[in-house]
Length: 433
Image 1 (cartoon, helix red, strand yellow):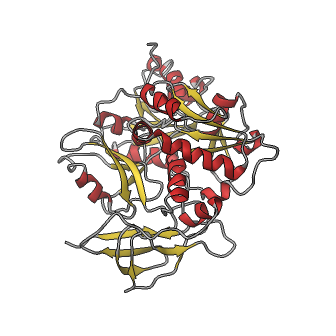
Image 2 (cartoon, rainbow, N blue to C red; image 1 turned 45 degrees about the horizontal axis):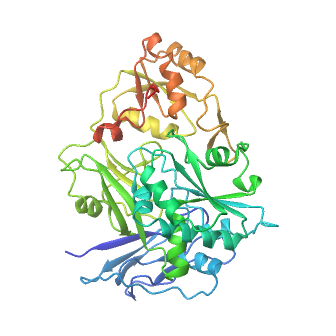
Image 3 (cartoon, helix red, strand yellow; image 1 turned 90 degrees about the vertical axis):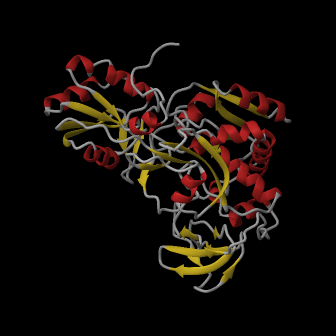
């Protein structure tokens, strides 16, 4: 049976990639099939399989793979590290999708800047980045060196949760420069949010409209750092992705896969994991907090970090109130879950720290630190809600649980389906160890 790979032209922030192949063309693994348009923020796109171009549309390129595939690839041709990063098509692989070369174009002055590796892997279930560090910490450290050289940074910090003892030990053994240190993070969500990382590692709280550069910092996802190393040292384009596959699998185990070819259908990755069981609620691409509903036919993207077959939806009450947090599922996501629960949404409230940006995206004033949600919960109760569906972070959820039970309001969380599917503790009240 033929295998078709699908490559959407927009897997990143910015303009879609511009096709440079035509239907019927023969392509090799690692060959560029779409490029950055002139004078645009975008990313190059490469085929992850050798085969024949099946279709070129305004939205995607499809390649029918040859029956025989190898791990070989067409190597990048640029000479300098920043040029290789740009040519490679690497983007933020933690989900943001911002073209990495654009983040590195402006070097720091006088060696004052710092490059921070986001190794928080803060979403529950997802564990491929920590697994990669435990297997080859030197690869990440080398990638950090490259980034520090490109932007003339004086320091490098690897931000990682304290709970990952083995990964921290491997990093300590691999670090070969006193300018690189480990930044310790608490085991709370959303410690992977870049402003939370800057706060925890540099003791600087950025405003909702500020980027890490305002603190003389650049934050880069751990897998992105590793792929930078591959692009510079191995001349490898962005054609493979690490990910965690979990949920209602036939054997119930959480699986970690490294170097999954981009463009594969989601169904093929689940089959690689042993297949999905007979009953599940939805397929989530991403993590439990911020992932989106997807289909078995959808392709693996540069930003795909997880695939989760969630638990069958629990029936909800007739009337449901939504509390939307900047750190988790947005309003549309909660409305989608509510509909799947069979509930009618009677009111929508927003976390008191959530600020709406010009783009319409919500940003938290101080990610992970919540002053309380009592007023929001009482407003939902007054609107007639019989239960709450929330997308709050760890601390915000804890404050919801301090008042909702007293108001006889059961609480559902946007992560419930994913977490129940792997028998993970639900996001509710924080309990001291």
